[in-house]
Amino acid sequence: MPCSSDGVPSGVEQRSILWLLDAVAGLDADLQKAFWDLFDVDVTVGELVLPDHMRKWVERYFGSAEAVLRQRIVKVTNRWTLDSTLFNELRARRPLEARIPVELADELARTAPDPFCEPEYNTPEDVFGRIRGRYVITASNIAKYDGLHGVIVFREHDPLAFDEPLVREMVAVARAWFDQAHAVDSEAIYPLFMWNCLWKSGASIPHGHAQVSLTRRMHYGKVERERRAATAYWRETGRRYFDDLFRVHERLGLGRSVNGVRVYASLTPLKEKETVLLAGAFDEELARIMNRVVRCLVDDLNVTSFNLVAWLPPLGTTVEDWSQVPVVVRIVDRGDPLSRTSDFGAMELYAASVVASDPFRVAEALWRCLE
Image (cartoon, rainbow, N blue to C red):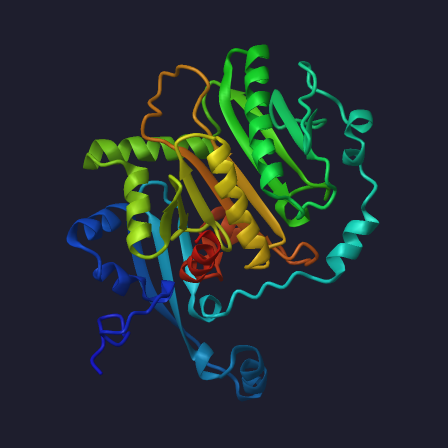
């Protein structure tokens, strides 16, 4: 059978990040242009010489010695934000089987006593007081990221026991917190919503909670970088950056629109299984889809520790243009919370992300959950 320039048999659809160039070649001309306006892709092969005494060990962990001798590596770089991700053939071909450790329940039980169990007695409140709901209550963060920085504490201790009513109320309470914090400081207009789950995500307390902050002068640096990228893309191409980003993912099978919320498995994930949501507002409908996506990651893809962030537009008038930027939610798996190994190293901090999960496999699971 003849092969394409990348070595994959022609006529065979390879739904894998390893054969991304062939998937792009199958797009319509206008979408190919949008893809190449947005991304750079490099494919390389890493080779090594294997000592004979290592063969049994390699066969045990990788299936065959031949699997490691030539490793296909795909690097995808966003031309505008310079987010860059490396996918290794050995890692991307593995099934998504990050198991939930049986020890996690025991560990949570051992750490059950915490200040969030009785937040009205054991946490400070914001200067404007607390916002109370049926499922959540706010507190002021005792060690602040910023001048206005709060916590949304779940009344349920188990951080993985969230459901749609809780997530909907959490979003509504976050909006109310932003309004009240802005009333305290009218110059603080740039809101950020964060949900860190379990230790690997950076959460120091396992009890379920989210965080909210409001900053001044300009948005947080990485949010502002995205805004500038979207503005530059518009000026150079005459097209909307986030629209093209979603269109490309959608046509590759990596994105779908669900009740007006655009969902996609990212081609340049920061780390494992990164999923992005684009919406017109931080509202109840986004909360519903957000809950379904995160529950899918937890229930179907065995995610236990994760980071979720929502980049929100300013609460007031600004000198910079935000017309190109929707509400952006990003969710990423942080791995086994009981593992000593960190998922972030020098590569992720200072060069490019190295990711094991194939976005095409992540998308397949998402579409099963969101049907």
